[in-house]
Amino acid sequence: MEPRRIDDYVWELPVGFVDGMNVPGHVFAGEALFRKAVQDRAVEQVANVATLPGIVGASLAMPDIHWGYGFPIGGVAATDPAAHGVISPGGVGFDIGCGVRLVRTSLPWTAEVRPKIGELVDTVARRVPRGVGGKGRLPIRPSEVDDVCRDGVRFALSRGAGWEEDAEYTEDRGALPDPRPSELSDRAKERGAPQLGSLGAGNHFLEIQVVDQIRDKRAAEVMDIHEGNVCVMVHSGSRGIGHQACTDHVKKIDGLMRGLDIDVPDRQLACVPLEHPAAESYLGAMDAAGNFAKANRQVLTHAAREAFAAVFKRTAGELGMSVVYDISHNLAKMERHDIDGKERLVCVHRKGATRALGPGHTELPDPYDEIGQPVVVPGSMGSASYLLVGRASSRSFASTCHGAGRAMSRTQAKKRMTGEELKRQLEDQGILVARSKWKLLAEEAPYAYKDSTEVVDTCEGAGLSKVVARLRPVGVIKG
Amino acid sequence: MGRFEILEHTADVGVRGRGKDLPEAFEMATRGLADICGTWVPDGGEVVDVQVRAEDVEAALVDWLNEVLWLQDSRDAVITRIEVDDVSDLGASGRLWLAPREDELEGTAVKAATYHQLRVARERDGWVTEIYVDV
Image 1 (cartoon, chains in turn orange, green):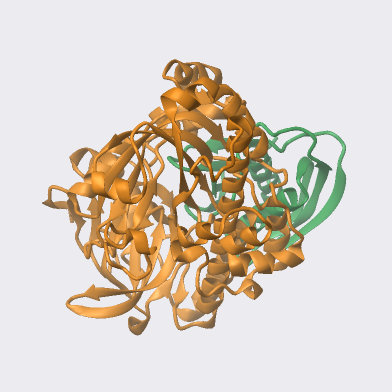
Image 2 (cartoon, chains in turn green, cyan):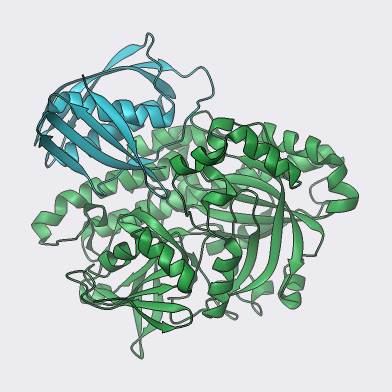
């Protein structure tokens, strides 16, 4: 069975591409992106996901697809509880609730920020804990983790770290609806508690960016985004609490599978029927960790606001530093979708994919009712990021891409250039990088990623989302 | 003499450990993990007994490495020495020596060890483990 191209933007992996597929695989990609996904073996992972019990529609991959563990990164799968559909924690991943937040400012780049960019990057970097180990900006006791996991953004607000409106402009109005912190182990709480308000490492970052192109004037106007102005983008997740929650629940579910007579082609796809108590337990832990991730980005936002206020000698309010939107790209949600002409409640796994609701959805903040759900897509360090709006595509369970997607391993990336060389190259392009472990910087070099423009344009062509604005980095604080 | 090597992966990273016997192959997998994290600092430290119970020997490797990650993360510690005594289908046991982290680490944060392409096998000249971790 060979893949076949359905249209300009979708490739199909027919049932039979690998043994045991229940539905076909659909990869949203043009010719070049699809070929990369085939070389990368990620396409095989799309087909493996199609073997999950109770999967409906198709096993999907967004254009930023790349090789993951179990699920591909960029994977989307909907499972139907009425058809003994399963939840697979690997379909959310170890960084539960990882996501991106965009904060606007009223500061013009050329007149106000460019002259102070060095001071600004240093000031933000000093206030944002990052890297391996260490404490976050708002460390808490393990006994307080339940409050964070229940209240999400509002926990941070209760500690003075933000504005009331911030919760409204965070997906799920600042907290997932069904958190059960009791389903998190003591180990997860102990691991995560000191880390609230820290970036983490790897591809996580806080960037100072300039809006350098507006493609949808009306949507940009609604979001108060203006060409030439500066924004802040935060990419981080649930830190150790999410990592441990996933570890614990994958182990538990892996142990249950033999008794349930479920067989999967990759052990990391460990799964359990949605009606099983272990599924309910995982989903409660996932929502709890997802709320920790939202609180984490909130605390980081507060740190960035404080840094801007210190440098520009005005309050963050005077600088117009409102949250545009905050959205996750690693979650599973129970959602209603039209499947074969019938509305069904399904569990949509998004592993490196973003929800992309269309205009008029009740879950959107009122001002965004007419434009649809904002989707924040981080580029790689040194390349453009994008602000999109969702189109609620029935072809993708209302999902779109989450980033540029890696194209090269970390080892390969480091062989091409040293961190110091990359830093100088970025500076030549007008991008200042805060002091970092240079040895690791090259792992996240722009050449290690796909072209984010090609990814978002493919999503637009396929009708999954629409580009509103392009943002160019000018200051990078790497995790 | 055991050894480890880093395996390429587009988004994440893998470790192959080799040893004359299973405990040594597990030790080498742990060394590789610490190398990725930047937490291998062979000097001093206090001993911690480690024991994991698992469904099979492959799961024992996942659980062992996840235990190591939990210990170094929750204690904000570096690893100074590793000894694995026993590995079987039922789990693994041994000791780690940990010391408080003093400097910023030249490493990548590892979230977890995964079951993806997991392999524990006997080869002509000893045992080999292969595991991918999420970074």
